[in-house]
Amino acid sequence: MASRILNLICRQCSAPVLRYKKSGSGKLIRIYLDCVAEPIELARLKSVGKKSDLPPFHCNGCNALLGIPMIESGRSAYRLLPGALGKKKSDA
Image 1 (cartoon, rainbow, N blue to C red):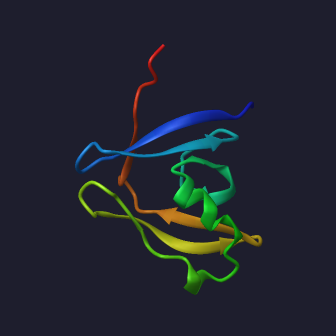
Image 2: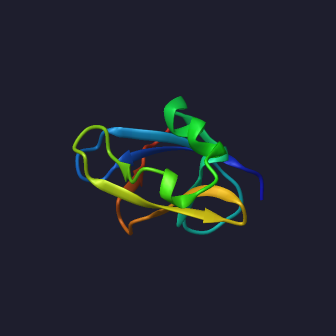
């Protein structure tokens, strides 16, 4: 399956959170920081090598906790809390 760009929003306040390049099918369980298109501040964290150096992932709108830092196969990522993010329909 080809990759696709997802526009993700906070389910609590509907604020835009990030644009993410998802590959494969299935649920979005974690976000890898090297696949984040926007915001650039989040994408810059991809080079962080230790889990303890990654800040928790919060919504900029309501400060809700969205994800927990993790390192998976040497890649910086966030494990998403179930139901924390929703998809915004793209303007076609």
